[in-house]
Length: 304
Ligand SMILES: [Mn+2]
Image (cartoon, rainbow, N blue to C red; front, side):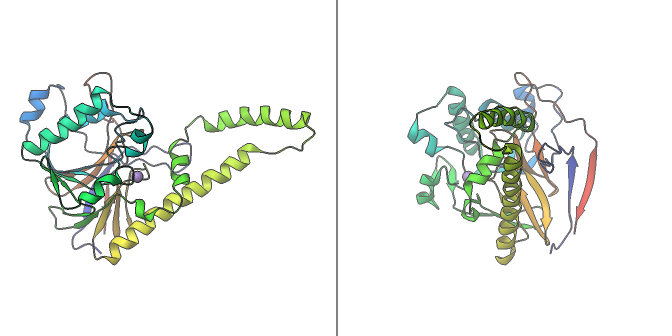
């Protein structure tokens, strides 16, 4: 239960192909002129910004979009909620373009300029977990953190991989696209003409995949409930996590569950405004430094 209600805005619901892929977005900054010096002068518009699942060191990482987002979202505190650097991928194959360096430089510079930067390692950057409590270039490493909002809500900040039973499902979910059904039907046709030639009975690939997707969705719900339940058990008002690459903010049995999404596909972050309002931001990275505000009308939603 919350000592005070939390208000947040929801801008635009994207009901994806999976029938429940809801993206909460809101509070895009007012950026008339995407001018670096102008936005730097705007000061700390946000008390806190939470990002995770950047996966630096992989081709999927949207480093340029993240840089753009960070430029427009100065904050008192910046939480890096895990899987910032993908150590798993880097071990396999070294991939480190300039943009990924720029992200690291940006984070270090931010810490130097007085922003409190807290790095909560995830499973892909678990090598950093051994440095719990240490400080690197002004970046604090904490295996878990607690953020107190302006309204006094205590939020547990953790990557979330400890709640993971079946990582495969989450990965599977992350790569499912809107064209999946169409693609599946095409594949199904080819597969079954082959099966027919081999004298095998008809077998529905799309049925099989639908079942898979359904269990993946169950996995997401189970994950969310497990994280929220643990936060409640530990006496927190809410939790901020990442890991499953699925931005979300909702109350689960009276505990606020926030997932700040990822910077591989959804380009989402969680922000806390000066008044303690929490919101998910979906960043629209148009060509160059231009940022587009989601035109969808804002809705207000109260959590009690
Ligand atoms: Mn993870």
